[in-house]
Image 1: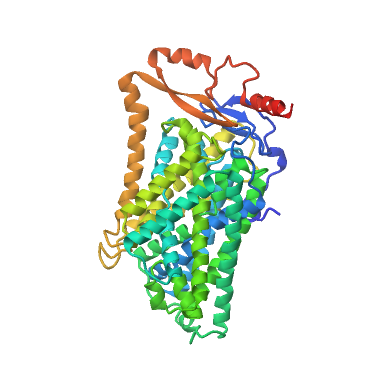
Image 2: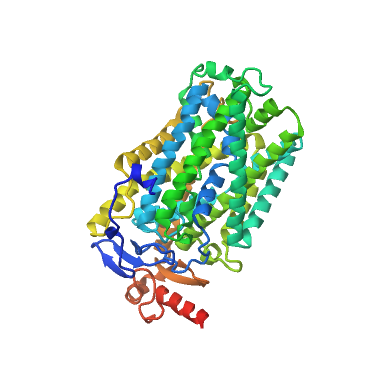
Length: 584
């Protein structure tokens, strides 16, 4: 049942699916190539400068319906629901508006998810989600979006906030409060274990994510059911309905509302995680559409019920000042200081660990796809899956940057600052992606290409555009208490300026790499296909002297393969030959 598609798309017959598997076409200005992946999806028709389709995924095809559900759930249900209710309540000012914001999170996620799904319908054999979508929506200026998004993705690939929350809950398990450096040490150790857990076997990584995902759902369901028991007056909580009688007391501020929406976006981040592994999914569009929606519905219902549980058990004042341990206050209010509280805190710590696993799996594919575009130095470091069939290069980079952020930032400010910083540049690229969907539609109509399997409703896309604009404009509004009255101990707009600085750094890198240096050193950039073994392919950007450009262009096709490679050297034929050889 196409649940996601029905309310948010226009239905099209299956005759619109591409039947052509290989070849090239041109609309006069843009050249498109057809390439077939090995995931039972229609042929991908993409602009020729895009990274080549991997006909046989070097990461395998281990992602099925259950894994899709738990990939998304494990990324959504991590630290957000247990750590952000305090900030969301403080930002909205009232219990009632806080609950509305948690419901709005579903709407923002479903609208953004529809944009992702239509893009994936165009490019069903390319993992990496935004990397691919921006690359294809804006092929000109050449390599601009691949370069800028790649730099941003690498710079913001840390998970220090989630690791710190993991450490805080582990200390709660021990019924103690660690010093700043003790928390840093535990956070770094926890993240290191997570990286090692996914580095040696892809299928094991998914099975681990699924297993922890089940624990996450059961833990959150336990909290939700316990909250209903509390509301019924069957626990030691004196007046479980007190907060609900004054649900609308409190006045929000523009800064508070924006800050709360940032926390909501952070808490729901993960609804798109399965799009990062599209080329590892058989029949990806139908499978992700259905099971991605199921995951989002499960999480939304559990989020709403969990907040009701918190509001029924803990006073509004305590929740607003609880920081990142709102769940611990809930457990203590309901169960006292018994050993059960430590066990429940451990389950939340395990949930945080599962979030680290899910983020590693998804974002490593995104970073790998950035490397496959050829715009980052040391192409094979990013794109190779040797020796274990896993993206070790992206894993190492994520570990290094996460360790750096854990050690550099004070733990008290790290969670709020990092969660804010991660949203601002993401909103800029999400805005470009949503607008780019109309660009892709226009270009494909111009080239007379068939419509996709899924097409999002225009009102849904426009709503997504408006949300991204809000996230970019409103953070400039200062808090009522002055410039230092934000959710961190320093200037409230630090994350905004830092986010803009990252975007500017991306642009500067692109200008120097693709414009200034080629002009100064008299060369032009061209792409060639790099085969890395085990089915892994990548583009490599090479420097061709100006005097040799004409010859290069005449001896290479639009993708970057030599024209004299022979009929058996196309990627599709190479994979056929490899399979035949292995069978013999």
